[in-house]
Amino acid sequence: MALLEILHFPDPRLRKIARPVDKVGDQVRQTVKDMLETMYDAPGIGLAATQVNIQQQIIVMDVSEAKDAPLCLINPEIISQEGDEEMQEGCLSVPGIFENVHRAARIIVKALDQNGNSISQQAEGLLAVCIQHEIDHLEGKLFVDYLSSLKRERVKKKLLKQQRQEQVPHGSASQQASVI
Ligand code: GNR
Ligand code: NI
Image (cartoon, rainbow, N blue to C red; front, side, top):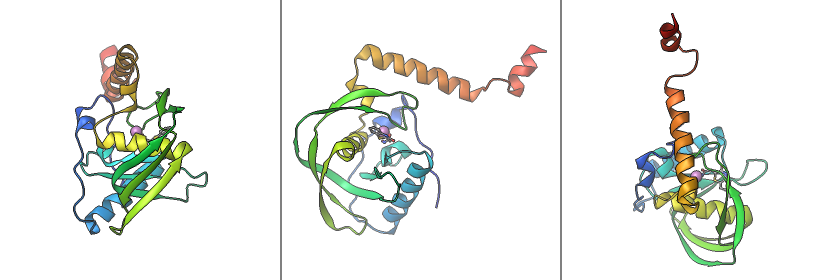
């Protein structure tokens, strides 16, 4: 088991396109395990392989209250969608930012499960939102792409500032030294 590092916007690696998994073997199953562990630890309700710098079409989710219903979709494909729903979204790759996004209200997604079996999953509500959010990640897309370019630039500035401050935290030895 291993915790994986989650990339943060505007890291260009979040824009890479994931390739389909051609064989669901032990390596893919290990990736799924590590992704679930990373998602629960974060904590988040979903995680796409792109967010942990793996360019394979793998997503994991758990939208249950008790966090006891892990779901994994490999090579997911939305085969039908209807309706429109607006929900406030957040993203582990865009920490601290929450904005409303419109998405299809009900979807049917086709995918492979952890055993390589073909499955078809119907979803609505939070699960439908989450699946669409995760599939976007596999295509190099982030929820901030649905915001106005002005808002997105503000988010980018805020996160870059946060990331600079994490590199040189307040009260660190280097800063204290400069005061003396
Ligand atoms: O943890 C998450 N919460 C969330 C809330 C509303 C809509 C989508 C999400 S997904 C997010 C985890 C994440 O970043 N997945 O890619
Ligand atoms: Ni996300």
